[in-house]
Image (tube, rainbow, N blue to C red; front, side):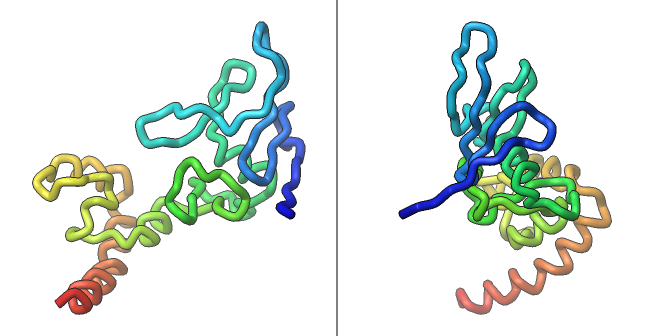
Length: 154
């Protein structure tokens, strides 16, 4: 039998479950209800509105179940499925850690969200999101991983 937990969010007046479901209180004409969230942005992250303000469901789960004790700047989905906001799939990570986890290198443009190797402008925009020091660290770490992958494929 599958067991899950429900806890009160530490700062908002909502309940959050360990499977990534949020109980929203009655708001205006909307009755109180459970939801996994609504697809809000083009990247596929799920959001809910609490008192008219949007919140990422993954961040609510992380805050409620203390999954980011080091207060890192982002929340990472371990299995890369941005709609899986279960406790087992959420952890805190810096931008550099997320990038390294995706094994970023120049030959792996898809990890920057660039699906065509000819779209160099999208690659450049993605690189600018990280500061220069993080990019260098990522490229050094991932260069060796990509080199190993090329050897495996040869």
